[in-house]
Amino acid sequence: MQFGRTTLSKFVIEQTRAQHGELGALLIDVAAAVKTISAMVAKGALAGHHGALDSTNVQGEVQKKLDVLTNEAILRHCEWGGQLAGMASEEMDDPYRIPEQYPRGRYLLVFDPLDGSSNSDVNVSVGTIFSIFARSTAGHAELDDYLRPGAEQLVAGYAIYGPSTMMVLTLGTGTHGFTLDRESGNFILTHADIRVPADTNEFAINTSNERFWEPPVQRYVTECKAGKTGVRGTDFNMRWIASMVAEVHRILMRGGIFMYPKDSKDPSKPGRLRLLYEANPMAMLIEQAGGAASTGRGRIVDVQPNALHQRVPVILGSKNEVERLERYHRDFDDGSDRPFVSPLFAERSLFRDEPRT
Image (cartoon, rainbow, N blue to C red; front, side, top):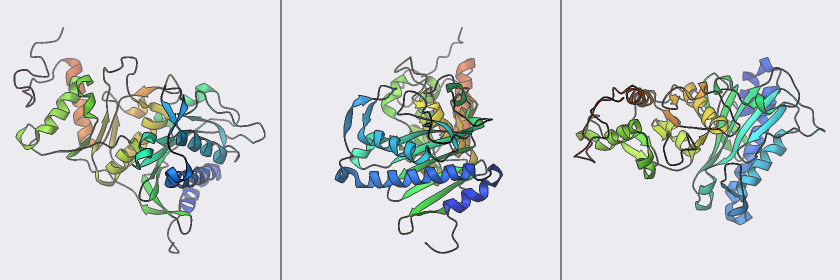
């Protein structure tokens, strides 16, 4: 490390002086957990961490060994410091109560310990997503304490474990990226005040679900795929990594739009991504970088949670593209969407000409 460069510890201490150091201390504990997880992921099959367990999480998803190990790493690194009233994780059915032998603070930490863990077996980038809220008083947190809209987040961030390990976070004053210097063990500020371009020609979506999408999303993607010959008049590139951290990181670095929209594949799930520990933190990071994050029908951070593991549609990234998709949803909902001839379906439109009743 070169002397004089800003470390994550220095940055968070300077940014959290008003909280008397408690929030900064919590973030330093989170960073320590990220370093531990980074080492686990880097060892991969050498440590026997790959493969699935005979268990599922509360969402019914098969747990990987790394899901459980990384969840445990965050709990152990963060439970003892006295800043937390409780924690909640994708891998736990219920909120985690701070053990009685440790002091309790007023902050709440919610997290996805290893986003994209299904990619770990094939050596594709994975990550950790986290978010911090505050209670008015210290003490054990109850379930209702966690059911807060994302607009009340104090901190949001993620770590990405790729060719280098990075932490990207916001404390409400811009989005900033830190790269782990393995020689010194410090995270160094390498991407200050990240900005997402307002325009883009790159989109990310799982097109295998196209038949389940709502018409506004079908309209948008069809127009993008039509390229210069279509109404957009420009060629678009499509990306899909199946790791939200990797998708969002690419958007923060060079722009783009990421979509995991509402679909009809499973009517019991209005969306695929979890609101509290996936959608909300990423929405805050993107908005603080000048982008936009929406369900298609409103800001993600304005959604009032009603369950710990609630799912929502997610559309985020370059502001002008997100706003276009919101407009398409409004047009569809009020029946004013204009008919168009899809280049994929020459004989019928994706939208009806007749007024809706």
